[in-house]
Length: 320
Ligand code: ADP
Image 1: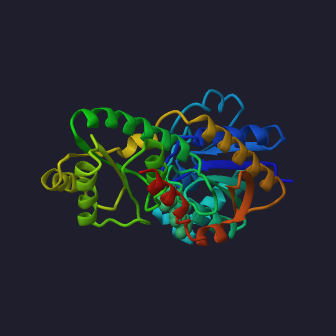
Image 2 (image 1 turned 45 degrees about the horizontal axis):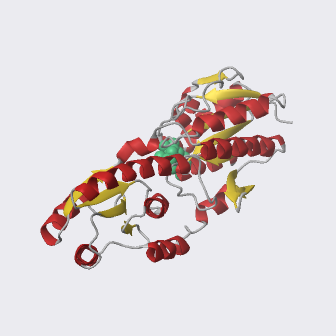
């Protein structure tokens, strides 16, 4: 039976990572497994920045955004020689297995380590919801709440000024934050990699909303990397009756206290990760599918095509 495990957070941070660290630590300690916190992701692992975690150390963190363990990117981790140093650091301390909380890049690192004899379990910690094996990632619900709060505020001022508010949200080429926010905020237009962006068509729709529907405002939610929203706002002002204003929400979407849903999801997933390691299983990632917590081989998870969310897009169109 595994006696010592490590836990690290890697890649972009997400609210709820702390709740996951807490769950992994407490569930493991309650099963008489020692837990070590590895600081700054794979970078701290290679450098040996590793300390034991206690129940008290993970107290008072369930409500905090970010990650108490810190996160970092270490592109060199793709190099087997660098990973050998990581394995040495773990072996030196008797740490047999690791829980990796992060996105798909972090999952690749976890799989590579598993192939070198260290069982790793991945937990989906990212606001983008861009891991296809799971319906929801830890942090998505919180980021969505942040977006909805911001868009609700923009809507108030937009109606007063006959404005078209163009809001760029994160997603790393996954449109989930945009489409969920579009439905939740009652937006007029949502643009994601699934819908594509045709500028002329967008301007035409906005003219219709102004002239035919006589809308006092228009809310357009656009996934990052689809277009330059500031340029588009200028075109809206020049070519429609609305005054176009762009807002890039940026990193505020990554922060804040995790929602209750994210805290519970992180706790369930943390528990599952420890259970898998206790059964000697590695190279898998924890997912939630149809409200059930399951394990999926990382290799399989990385190759699942992303859901198109056509049903959500259809719902959105029927609500406009
Ligand atoms: P995320 O986990 O949020 O997708 P990144 O893509 O930046 O973030 O990945 C986080 C870290 O995972 C990288 O800095 C690197 O250390 C490690 N990593 C990414 N891809 C690989 C890979 N193919 N092999 C080994 N490690 C990887």
